[in-house]
Image (tube, rainbow, N blue to C red; front, side, top):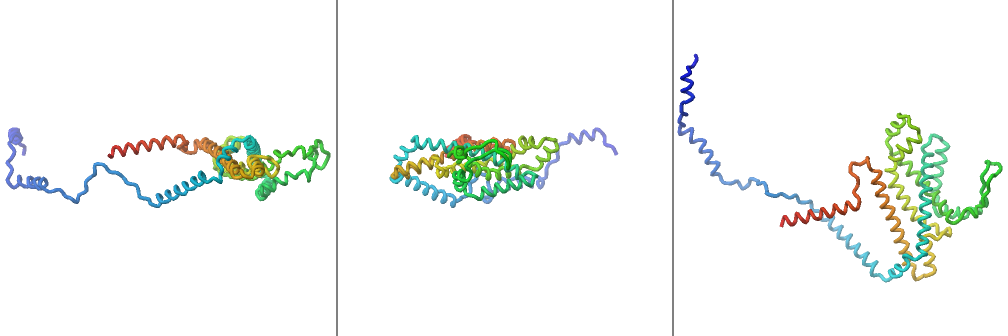
Length: 350
Protein backbone atom coordinates (compact mmCIF):
# COMPACT_ATOMS: atom_id res chain seq x y z
CA UNK A 1 0.00 0.00 0.00
CA UNK A 2 1.55 3.30 -1.11
CA UNK A 3 1.78 6.36 1.03
CA UNK A 4 0.50 9.73 -0.03
CA UNK A 5 2.91 12.63 -0.64
CA UNK A 6 1.27 14.56 2.14
CA UNK A 7 1.92 11.82 4.59
CA UNK A 8 5.56 11.70 3.55
CA UNK A 9 5.95 15.45 4.03
CA UNK A 10 4.23 15.34 7.37
CA UNK A 11 6.48 12.53 8.56
CA UNK A 12 9.61 14.34 7.47
CA UNK A 13 8.59 17.64 9.00
CA UNK A 14 7.23 16.15 12.18
CA UNK A 15 9.14 17.22 15.33
CA UNK A 16 11.26 14.56 16.98
CA UNK A 17 9.62 12.55 19.62
CA UNK A 18 10.32 13.55 23.15
CA UNK A 19 12.75 11.39 24.96
CA UNK A 20 11.47 9.42 27.85
CA UNK A 21 13.13 9.90 31.20
CA UNK A 22 14.50 6.37 31.10
CA UNK A 23 16.04 6.76 27.62
CA UNK A 24 17.53 10.17 28.32
CA UNK A 25 18.98 9.35 31.70
CA UNK A 26 20.94 6.20 30.72
CA UNK A 27 23.56 7.71 28.38
CA UNK A 28 23.86 10.81 30.58
CA UNK A 29 24.60 8.58 33.52
CA UNK A 30 27.37 6.83 31.57
CA UNK A 31 28.96 10.14 30.52
CA UNK A 32 28.76 11.46 34.06
CA UNK A 33 30.45 8.32 35.39
CA UNK A 34 33.26 8.65 32.88
CA UNK A 35 33.76 12.31 33.67
CA UNK A 36 33.67 11.86 37.42
CA UNK A 37 35.84 8.72 37.52
CA UNK A 38 39.16 9.43 39.27
CA UNK A 39 42.44 8.88 37.42
CA UNK A 40 43.77 5.34 37.55
CA UNK A 41 47.18 5.55 39.18
CA UNK A 42 48.28 2.16 37.88
CA UNK A 43 47.73 3.08 34.21
CA UNK A 44 51.06 3.90 32.45
CA UNK A 45 51.55 7.35 31.05
CA UNK A 46 53.68 8.00 27.98
CA UNK A 47 56.65 10.09 29.12
CA UNK A 48 57.31 13.39 27.50
CA UNK A 49 60.95 12.49 26.66
CA UNK A 50 62.14 8.88 26.72
CA UNK A 51 65.86 7.99 26.78
CA UNK A 52 67.41 4.58 26.27
CA UNK A 53 70.17 3.92 28.81
CA UNK A 54 73.07 1.70 27.70
CA UNK A 55 73.78 -1.53 29.48
CA UNK A 56 76.24 -1.16 32.34
CA UNK A 57 79.53 -2.95 31.74
CA UNK A 58 81.72 -2.60 34.83
CA UNK A 59 84.22 -5.18 33.59
CA UNK A 60 85.05 -3.04 30.58
CA UNK A 61 85.66 0.03 32.74
CA UNK A 62 87.86 -1.95 35.13
CA UNK A 63 89.94 -3.39 32.27
CA UNK A 64 90.29 0.08 30.73
CA UNK A 65 91.48 1.55 34.03
CA UNK A 66 94.04 -1.25 34.50
CA UNK A 67 95.40 -0.78 30.97
CA UNK A 68 95.68 3.00 31.43
CA UNK A 69 97.51 2.59 34.73
CA UNK A 70 99.98 0.11 33.21
CA UNK A 71 100.55 2.34 30.17
CA UNK A 72 101.17 5.34 32.44
CA UNK A 73 103.70 3.35 34.46
CA UNK A 74 105.54 2.23 31.31
CA UNK A 75 105.72 5.78 29.94
CA UNK A 76 106.83 7.12 33.33
CA UNK A 77 109.58 4.50 33.51
CA UNK A 78 110.80 5.32 29.99
CA UNK A 79 110.92 9.04 30.69
CA UNK A 80 112.38 9.09 34.20
CA UNK A 81 114.86 6.17 34.01
CA UNK A 82 118.34 7.70 33.45
CA UNK A 83 119.66 4.40 32.10
CA UNK A 84 118.00 5.08 28.72
CA UNK A 85 120.12 8.24 28.22
CA UNK A 86 117.66 10.13 26.06
CA UNK A 87 120.20 12.89 25.46
CA UNK A 88 122.51 10.38 23.77
CA UNK A 89 119.52 8.99 21.88
CA UNK A 90 118.90 12.46 20.47
CA UNK A 91 122.57 12.75 19.55
CA UNK A 92 122.69 9.45 17.63
CA UNK A 93 119.26 9.54 15.99
CA UNK A 94 120.26 11.62 12.94
CA UNK A 95 123.97 10.90 12.82
CA UNK A 96 125.34 10.27 9.27
CA UNK A 97 126.44 6.76 10.23
CA UNK A 98 122.90 5.81 11.25
CA UNK A 99 121.36 7.46 8.19
CA UNK A 100 123.77 5.64 5.87
CA UNK A 101 122.77 2.35 7.44
CA UNK A 102 119.11 3.33 7.08
CA UNK A 103 119.59 3.95 3.35
CA UNK A 104 121.19 0.52 2.94
CA UNK A 105 118.23 -1.04 4.79
CA UNK A 106 115.77 0.70 2.48
CA UNK A 107 117.74 -0.29 -0.61
CA UNK A 108 118.00 -3.95 0.36
CA UNK A 109 114.33 -4.04 1.36
CA UNK A 110 113.16 -2.47 -1.89
CA UNK A 111 115.15 -4.82 -4.14
CA UNK A 112 114.26 -7.89 -2.12
CA UNK A 113 110.55 -7.02 -1.96
CA UNK A 114 110.25 -6.57 -5.73
CA UNK A 115 112.33 -9.62 -6.64
CA UNK A 116 110.65 -11.72 -3.95
CA UNK A 117 107.18 -10.81 -5.18
CA UNK A 118 108.05 -11.52 -8.83
CA UNK A 119 109.63 -14.82 -7.85
CA UNK A 120 106.64 -15.66 -5.70
CA UNK A 121 104.27 -15.08 -8.61
CA UNK A 122 106.32 -17.37 -10.86
CA UNK A 123 106.51 -20.11 -8.23
CA UNK A 124 102.77 -19.80 -7.48
CA UNK A 125 101.98 -20.20 -11.18
CA UNK A 126 104.22 -23.28 -11.18
CA UNK A 127 102.27 -24.70 -8.23
CA UNK A 128 99.01 -24.08 -10.10
CA UNK A 129 100.33 -25.43 -13.41
CA UNK A 130 99.11 -28.68 -14.95
CA UNK A 131 102.70 -29.78 -15.56
CA UNK A 132 103.77 -32.27 -12.88
CA UNK A 133 107.42 -31.20 -13.28
CA UNK A 134 106.64 -27.53 -12.62
CA UNK A 135 104.44 -28.43 -9.66
CA UNK A 136 107.14 -30.67 -8.17
CA UNK A 137 109.95 -28.14 -8.63
CA UNK A 138 107.85 -25.27 -7.24
CA UNK A 139 106.78 -27.32 -4.24
CA UNK A 140 110.37 -28.40 -3.56
CA UNK A 141 111.62 -24.80 -3.72
CA UNK A 142 108.95 -23.61 -1.30
CA UNK A 143 109.55 -26.53 1.06
CA UNK A 144 113.34 -25.99 1.06
CA UNK A 145 113.49 -22.25 1.69
CA UNK A 146 110.71 -22.29 4.25
CA UNK A 147 112.58 -24.97 6.16
CA UNK A 148 116.09 -23.44 6.15
CA UNK A 149 116.68 -20.43 8.46
CA UNK A 150 117.45 -17.16 6.71
CA UNK A 151 120.77 -16.69 8.49
CA UNK A 152 121.92 -20.08 7.13
CA UNK A 153 120.97 -19.02 3.58
CA UNK A 154 122.89 -15.76 3.92
CA UNK A 155 126.00 -17.41 5.32
CA UNK A 156 125.88 -20.11 2.65
CA UNK A 157 125.70 -17.49 -0.12
CA UNK A 158 128.44 -15.45 1.53
CA UNK A 159 130.76 -18.46 1.31
CA UNK A 160 129.48 -19.55 -2.10
CA UNK A 161 132.77 -18.64 -3.76
CA UNK A 162 134.46 -21.45 -1.87
CA UNK A 163 132.26 -23.96 -3.73
CA UNK A 164 132.06 -22.29 -7.15
CA UNK A 165 134.81 -19.82 -7.99
CA UNK A 166 133.45 -19.14 -11.48
CA UNK A 167 129.98 -19.11 -13.00
CA UNK A 168 129.40 -19.77 -16.70
CA UNK A 169 126.62 -19.67 -19.28
CA UNK A 170 126.59 -22.01 -22.24
CA UNK A 171 125.36 -25.35 -23.53
CA UNK A 172 124.36 -27.72 -20.69
CA UNK A 173 127.09 -30.30 -20.20
CA UNK A 174 128.98 -28.60 -23.03
CA UNK A 175 131.15 -25.58 -23.77
CA UNK A 176 130.66 -22.31 -21.88
CA UNK A 177 130.10 -19.05 -23.73
CA UNK A 178 130.40 -16.60 -20.85
CA UNK A 179 132.34 -16.97 -17.61
CA UNK A 180 132.00 -14.78 -14.50
CA UNK A 181 134.21 -14.44 -11.47
CA UNK A 182 131.90 -15.16 -8.55
CA UNK A 183 134.05 -13.31 -6.02
CA UNK A 184 133.74 -10.05 -7.98
CA UNK A 185 130.09 -10.54 -8.87
CA UNK A 186 128.85 -11.45 -5.39
CA UNK A 187 129.35 -8.22 -3.45
CA UNK A 188 127.96 -7.82 0.05
CA UNK A 189 124.80 -6.08 -1.08
CA UNK A 190 124.25 -8.62 -3.89
CA UNK A 191 124.57 -11.50 -1.43
CA UNK A 192 122.10 -9.81 0.93
CA UNK A 193 119.55 -9.07 -1.81
CA UNK A 194 119.79 -12.55 -3.35
CA UNK A 195 119.47 -14.30 0.01
CA UNK A 196 116.50 -12.23 1.14
CA UNK A 197 114.82 -12.52 -2.27
CA UNK A 198 115.13 -16.31 -2.33
CA UNK A 199 113.67 -16.56 1.14
CA UNK A 200 110.94 -14.01 0.42
CA UNK A 201 109.87 -15.71 -2.82
CA UNK A 202 109.13 -18.96 -0.98
CA UNK A 203 106.68 -17.26 1.38
CA UNK A 204 105.27 -14.90 -1.26
CA UNK A 205 104.42 -17.84 -3.51
CA UNK A 206 102.07 -19.25 -0.90
CA UNK A 207 100.48 -15.84 -0.39
CA UNK A 208 99.92 -15.40 -4.14
CA UNK A 209 98.64 -18.96 -4.54
CA UNK A 210 96.13 -18.54 -1.71
CA UNK A 211 94.93 -15.25 -3.22
CA UNK A 212 94.41 -16.82 -6.64
CA UNK A 213 92.55 -19.76 -5.13
CA UNK A 214 90.33 -17.30 -3.21
CA UNK A 215 88.89 -15.93 -6.48
CA UNK A 216 85.49 -17.42 -7.21
CA UNK A 217 85.58 -20.27 -9.71
CA UNK A 218 82.82 -18.61 -11.67
CA UNK A 219 85.22 -15.84 -12.67
CA UNK A 220 87.54 -18.39 -14.29
CA UNK A 221 84.62 -20.09 -16.05
CA UNK A 222 83.22 -16.79 -17.31
CA UNK A 223 86.61 -15.71 -18.66
CA UNK A 224 87.06 -19.07 -20.38
CA UNK A 225 83.55 -18.87 -21.85
CA UNK A 226 84.43 -15.51 -23.41
CA UNK A 227 87.41 -17.11 -25.11
CA UNK A 228 89.99 -14.88 -23.43
CA UNK A 229 93.64 -15.99 -23.48
CA UNK A 230 95.04 -17.44 -20.27
CA UNK A 231 97.52 -14.59 -19.84
CA UNK A 232 94.75 -12.01 -20.24
CA UNK A 233 92.53 -13.88 -17.78
CA UNK A 234 95.25 -13.83 -15.15
CA UNK A 235 96.46 -10.24 -15.58
CA UNK A 236 93.09 -8.50 -16.05
CA UNK A 237 90.52 -10.65 -14.23
CA UNK A 238 91.99 -13.09 -11.73
CA UNK A 239 95.01 -11.25 -10.33
CA UNK A 240 93.25 -7.89 -9.65
CA UNK A 241 90.61 -9.73 -7.63
CA UNK A 242 93.25 -11.82 -5.87
CA UNK A 243 95.07 -8.66 -4.76
CA UNK A 244 92.35 -8.07 -2.15
CA UNK A 245 93.51 -11.23 -0.39
CA UNK A 246 97.19 -10.91 -1.28
CA UNK A 247 97.75 -7.35 -0.03
CA UNK A 248 97.32 -7.78 3.76
CA UNK A 249 99.27 -11.04 3.82
CA UNK A 250 102.10 -9.73 1.66
CA UNK A 251 102.39 -6.57 3.74
CA UNK A 252 102.99 -8.81 6.75
CA UNK A 253 105.82 -10.42 4.77
CA UNK A 254 107.15 -6.98 3.85
CA UNK A 255 107.21 -5.91 7.49
CA UNK A 256 108.98 -9.15 8.36
CA UNK A 257 111.43 -8.44 5.52
CA UNK A 258 112.27 -5.02 6.95
CA UNK A 259 113.14 -6.63 10.26
CA UNK A 260 115.00 -9.50 8.57
CA UNK A 261 117.42 -7.04 6.98
CA UNK A 262 119.07 -6.82 10.40
CA UNK A 263 120.63 -10.23 9.61
CA UNK A 264 122.71 -8.86 6.72
CA UNK A 265 125.08 -7.53 9.38
CA UNK A 266 126.46 -11.08 9.52
CA UNK A 267 127.52 -10.88 5.86
CA UNK A 268 129.57 -7.72 6.48
CA UNK A 269 126.89 -5.26 5.31
CA UNK A 270 126.38 -2.31 7.64
CA UNK A 271 122.66 -1.68 7.48
CA UNK A 272 120.69 0.15 10.19
CA UNK A 273 121.20 -2.51 12.82
CA UNK A 274 124.80 -3.10 11.70
CA UNK A 275 125.61 0.60 12.05
CA UNK A 276 124.07 0.72 15.53
CA UNK A 277 125.94 -2.45 16.52
CA UNK A 278 129.23 -1.09 15.15
CA UNK A 279 128.85 2.21 16.99
CA UNK A 280 127.91 0.30 20.15
CA UNK A 281 131.19 -1.58 19.95
CA UNK A 282 133.08 1.67 19.58
CA UNK A 283 131.11 3.47 22.32
CA UNK A 284 130.17 0.82 24.91
CA UNK A 285 128.43 3.37 27.12
CA UNK A 286 125.91 4.17 24.37
CA UNK A 287 124.71 0.65 23.61
CA UNK A 288 121.21 1.20 25.01
CA UNK A 289 120.65 4.58 23.24
CA UNK A 290 121.87 3.07 19.97
CA UNK A 291 119.51 0.11 20.32
CA UNK A 292 116.68 2.55 20.98
CA UNK A 293 117.65 4.50 17.86
CA UNK A 294 117.45 1.32 15.75
CA UNK A 295 114.15 0.38 17.40
CA UNK A 296 112.54 3.75 16.68
CA UNK A 297 113.67 3.73 13.05
CA UNK A 298 112.25 0.22 12.55
CA UNK A 299 108.99 1.41 14.11
CA UNK A 300 108.88 4.34 11.70
CA UNK A 301 109.51 2.11 8.67
CA UNK A 302 106.91 -0.49 9.63
CA UNK A 303 104.36 2.21 10.47
CA UNK A 304 104.85 3.80 7.05
CA UNK A 305 104.29 0.41 5.40
CA UNK A 306 101.12 -0.09 7.48
CA UNK A 307 99.77 3.28 6.30
CA UNK A 308 100.43 2.36 2.68
CA UNK A 309 98.74 -0.99 3.30
CA UNK A 310 95.57 0.74 4.51
CA UNK A 311 95.19 2.87 1.39
CA UNK A 312 96.07 -0.01 -0.96
CA UNK A 313 93.44 -2.23 0.68
CA UNK A 314 90.95 0.64 0.52
CA UNK A 315 91.66 1.07 -3.20
CA UNK A 316 91.19 -2.61 -4.08
CA UNK A 317 88.07 -2.93 -1.92
CA UNK A 318 86.12 -0.72 -4.34
CA UNK A 319 83.29 -2.73 -5.84
CA UNK A 320 83.62 -5.45 -3.20
CA UNK A 321 82.17 -3.48 -0.26
CA UNK A 322 79.28 -1.05 -0.24
CA UNK A 323 80.96 1.41 2.10
CA UNK A 324 84.70 2.04 1.96
CA UNK A 325 86.51 2.01 5.32
CA UNK A 326 86.96 5.57 6.63
CA UNK A 327 90.38 7.18 6.51
CA UNK A 328 92.02 8.41 9.76
CA UNK A 329 91.04 11.99 8.88
CA UNK A 330 87.42 10.94 8.35
CA UNK A 331 87.44 9.08 11.68
CA UNK A 332 88.78 12.17 13.43
CA UNK A 333 86.04 14.33 11.90
CA UNK A 334 83.40 11.80 12.91
CA UNK A 335 84.74 11.72 16.47
CA UNK A 336 84.65 15.52 16.74
CA UNK A 337 81.13 15.58 15.36
CA UNK A 338 80.00 13.01 17.93
CA UNK A 339 81.60 15.00 20.76
CA UNK A 340 79.80 18.15 19.64
CA UNK A 341 76.50 16.27 19.42
CA UNK A 342 76.95 14.90 22.96
CA UNK A 343 77.79 18.33 24.31
CA UNK A 344 74.70 19.76 22.62
CA UNK A 345 72.46 17.07 24.10
CA UNK A 346 73.88 17.69 27.59
CA UNK A 347 73.24 21.41 27.32
CA UNK A 348 69.69 20.73 26.17
CA UNK A 349 69.12 18.33 29.07
CA UNK A 350 70.34 20.93 31.59
